[in-house]
Image (cartoon, rainbow, N blue to C red; front, side, top):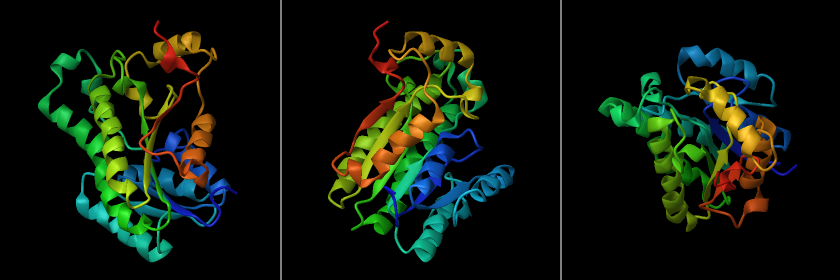
Length: 255
């Protein structure tokens, strides 16, 4: 029970295929009490149905574009949990039209939305989480993608947002390290999720990576969740500022 007696919050659970949900479920299996957040009424039903399958959950609304809602989440966590041991940031969003055509044609608004939701939200969440995590060897974990390091066709503005997210991990690791709070990211290989459904040619990406990855297959949600469990637990107490690739080795390939 690697997380026995610990409490954490998971942002970004959309449905049962979400990497964030796989991580939340795995953490709960290892003894952690979990809070899940959802954005808007459209996703509330899914979040509550999933939460009903784990032990003693807390379900809270949160639109990360609104500072008052982020603050309300952490006020509720303080009241219910007393403190916090880990945060999982699984939030990413870009306007659908920005994931088509060329990055060259990214709109100003499309750029702002992708950066605010997918990257800035990590800093906003970490700022509110830190007071609840001090003295507990806390762990903050986000989900990134290789498209922030290399060009992935049609990933466009999301790739730029992920590059920003990757650097946010490093700067937050420095800022929060003196408070014994670790900040890391998992760069997962392509997985069929609600978010990936909006990427043009996604099935071709899956096929290409399956054929070129050293393990000759794609990663699955459970493998990502197991890696997350390591980073959230005390086993990774000396690891911070790290981008851990869980992609069957694809990221090492030159061609």
